[in-house]
Image (cartoon, rainbow, N blue to C red):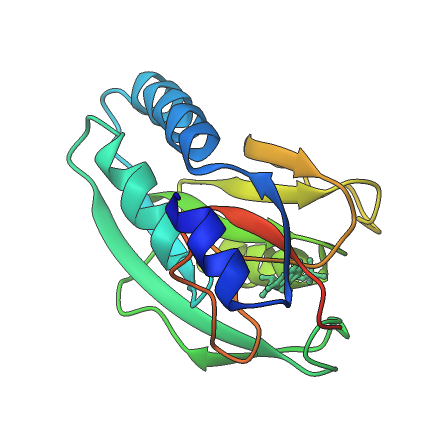
Length: 184
Ligand code: 5GP
């Protein structure tokens, strides 16, 4: 029995796997190669949006063959646990100055795109030399505005998922794959 099967048997709220651990590994290696090629000679500052992006950012960073720097911010959106309202508050701000830096914003999942659009505007106001976005997951058809994503891992159906950084009530972030959550 593999880890996915064991976790699923132990928890009836976990549904079918959407992205397997092997698919994540292969796609992140590809993304790492693309970022390495694109940022040759101008190493980026990776900015992760906590908490969801921490697993992806850690694997992505190790697939990039450049001298990286890292910073993190945490945002919380007002709304229910599973729906974003679009009103976003910075809970933890960055430590570093972004001016004249090549910033690569690392996001776990883009659903309505409202969180990303807020964070992007906020970071742009700090005067980076460039700002691009790398999102692991993008939900099909839900973005209200064109989210302008430079790098995307997977486009997935518009269903609530957990694992690989994504939680419900702080649980499931350490699942090594992405699966549907049935407990809504
Ligand atoms: P958006 O602002 O794009 O609607 O939502 C983005 C944020 O909502 C993500 O950073 C994530 O925290 C949360 N989110 C959106 N969809 C999902 C999902 O399917 N599962 C989990 N666990 N969180 C999600």
